[in-house]
Length: 256
Image (tube, rainbow, N blue to C red; front, side, top):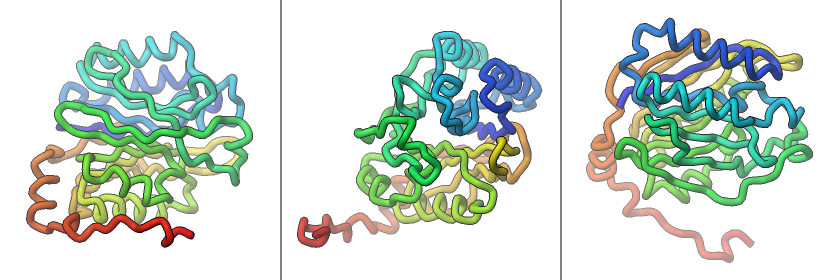
């Protein structure tokens, strides 16, 4: 499976303008016909905004992504607010929604918890034969969320608006989640600036051993994985290095 990491400088709180940017990036991407799964950053059409009206997706926004999926015959994951939740939505090649995950860990330090509702349920879904578990930005700092789903996951997808000054944290945590759970991790972050902060991109894919499969660095545009993300590599790694055999579920008193 070829994964396209789409990182870009969002036009602040302007959904139509960001649709135009995404459409142009795809049209100009030399490998657009080879992408099986396109992944975009958190709150794709607005930037990480506490303006709920600007960040909330409407039917036209859903139709835009659905049309792209059908036009390029690819799966698409994107971010946006639905029913008061900060969501990661995934469409199949026919443009139909197959997953909508609500962010569980809201970034209260930036006031996110004051404007959006906490997600309550982790989920895993099937995509092109892969078992995919989604997460959004601040979720990445909570390893138990990933560990809980590790045995039924082939690839984690993490979309984000991660600050440039903490880029090392972002890359380190993505690699750690891949290594400790022995599966792929695809992380997509935005570039550019919003009215408050800069973002460095650094969208990446790591394999089950923590090796880099794709690295978008800080370049705006679409980076396509240069080698196939292969489900068999997950099973091979877990068989050859059977860490899961030593996994222990902590008894309740350990959390007291």
